[in-house]
Length: 208
Image (cartoon, rainbow, N blue to C red; front, side, top):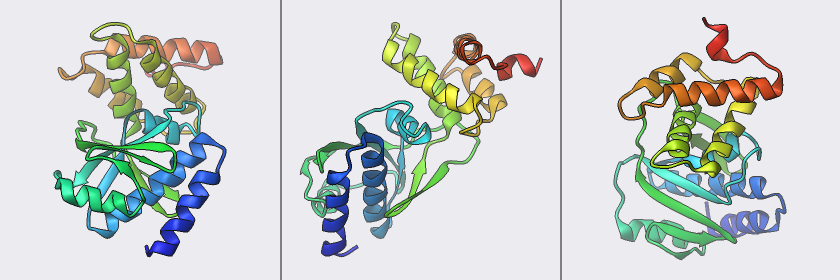
């Protein structure tokens, strides 16, 4: 993207009053600028859940991990983000009134594919919802109860149960059993509670 297109895109992001649309547009813009340098990034964490739930949960920032290459020099990070008139760095910047974080290489144990969303300035890669769910459940209970992570997980479960986001529930179970997570009972409980509130059947019950 040339300077004029970037400026117009930044103006578009800044003018949007919907926080989720702002995050969506900014994620698309950042992803495209990294991709033009041969670098693939993935939206992760609460930011990914915000995009997948279309605002059912709001994170307030955009978090990326590196997909390829797994490392990126500090100078190159600053040059890419400099094109967005970003402030700060080398891992967290402020762009168009929002924070953009580059957290390091992607850590994913999921066997399901990354999700792709078509953004206004280019496609966005989003980490697997199965991994997101199990990760949020872990954070919600260890090392101590953390209600914001639980609320985040519930928002993702709700859209999945309504069929708005496709989730591979056997893969959720597999991930939750892994020694890296070990949260299968907690995950099943959260899904059942959410299903009961929505008057739906939990996928963990329907498969037994």
